[in-house]
Image (cartoon, rainbow, N blue to C red; front, side, top):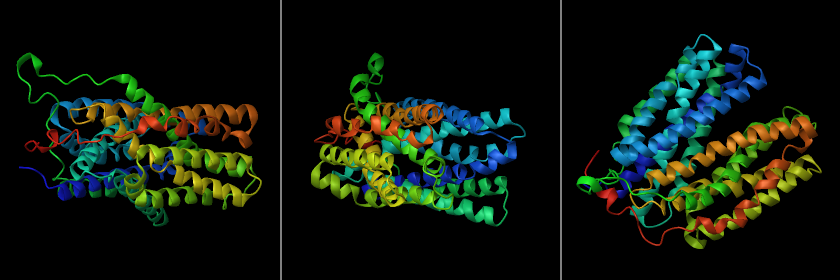
Length: 396
């Protein structure tokens, strides 16, 4: 039985919500984890780098699993396992096991990233109009709720274990109740017979050419989420209380642009949107580096949120053009740009801060973000649905 598009859209929105809520709930408790285990900043850097590598592995595994079982099964299974494993870091008695536990969660984090975007692209194809950025707006909104929950549990002096257990219960409940109507895509090669029953080859080069500017976006996003506070307090001598406003402005404008992003793509097309957003992002980072005063820095981070907001969803749609069997393999590959950007930001910005000082750490994003307008043509999207047959198979 064919899943109605509206029901599938609600199910995918639920998947994005669980992912954003779960990730933010854990990420915002990182200072507590640092204190509980006596970690240094270097330890945190290495821990997050290990998680990024694990997430990249999970993304590839999800593409492999989805090509055989369908992306609906991949998303529901990976989401459930992410909800369960988010509790593991709170149970670990020492640093070594903490690293292992966090990496296990990272594998399923990456798997959900790939599978939920595969489903999102398939649902967009069913609608025949841009709706992909709305899914990412849901992720951003749910992440805000996760951060609010973390703040509330900290205020109530609720420990890490009961807090993460609550997050796990919420994620599993949403999965069970709201994610049953995902599009049951046929696995790659399911309609073939005999020796021909295999997934078609997905070319690497077109995916790489999409991944390069997307990596620049994720590097800049990571620089903002991880390093903006340090840049303002240590590089610009801003007070600790004023520094978080920059990141808040970034996230607020990012969410607002994602809420209207589908209309922008429908009106102007993906290539023009990415080119314009890339130009805005370049101007924004230039303002952040120039930094003649705090209002200009705040303006820069706000503009940067708007400039980067639509690149991730449009990169997944563009990648799926090159994968006629549901997009899972291509999307899993371009999703690696997320983790590559994070790793590059972590080490290059740390190197610049160490050698030239914290004042110049945002020179790194300034060097790479112009790739967005320069390579915007790689974000051209399909002119017809590639998933119309694969998305209408029997249930998983």
